[in-house]
Image (cartoon, rainbow, N blue to C red; front, top):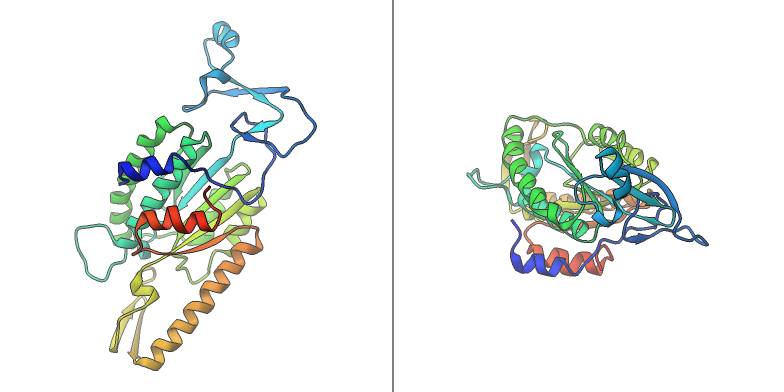
Length: 299
C-alpha cells in the first residue's frame, strides 16, 4: 500500500495540530502549560506502543500489571483518522475488480498519515463510517497493524458499498464524538451527503478536536467528460436524474462545484480546522510531500 521509499520520507515528518492543546498524557509534545516542572500527575493503564521507559516497574512488581506514569507538562497528541467508506467513495466510471481510484487514494492517505503519527509517538485511532475501528495505538511498531487494518477494510467496505449500505455523515461524526479526547481529527471524505456534515464537525469540535478535512474528489467529479442526454444515478441514494449536458450546463456545474467547495471549506474553518482539496489522480507522494507540507499539515 505504501512504498518503502515513501515510508522513509515519512519518517522525517510530523503532523502539525492547528493549535496546541492541554493534556495529561505523557508524550513527546510539549504542553501549552507554562511555568511548571515535570511533575508527576497520575497513572494510567499501559497500551501497546507506549514507551516502556514510562512504565512504573515498582507497581508492576507488586501488581503484575503495567501502568504508565503521567506528568503535568508533557502530553501526547491523539490523532483520529476518520475514513469515509460510503458508496460514493467506491464509485468508478467503469466497473472492475480493482479498488476505485478515490477510495485507494483515501486509504493510502490514512495509512501514510497514521504512519507519521505512530512514528512520532502520537496515539492513533482510525474509524470508518461503517463502524470499523483501529486503535488507540502508539509507536511505529504498530504501523504494520495499521496498514493491515486498512487493507482489510478496503475489501469489507467495498462489499458493503456495493450493497448500498451507508450512514449519513452527520450521524457518523456525531457517533465518533461520543468517545474522543481532545486532539486532532483528520476527516478523509468526498463530502457527498445532501445534508452535509456541519453538525457532525461541530460535535467533534465541541469535544476539543481540531477537525481537518481532506476533501477527496476524482477527475470525473472535478472535470466531467460527459455530454448529451443521460440519466445520472446517485450511488448514495439510488435517485435518478435525466439531464441534457452541453457546454452551458457543464459551465454551470463548475460554478456550483466551486461554490460548494468554498462552502465546505468555510464550514471546516469556522470550527478552527483546515481544508485541502485532493484530486485523487495526483501521485500520493505529491499530495503528502508537496501539498500537505505546503499547507502546513506536515513538517
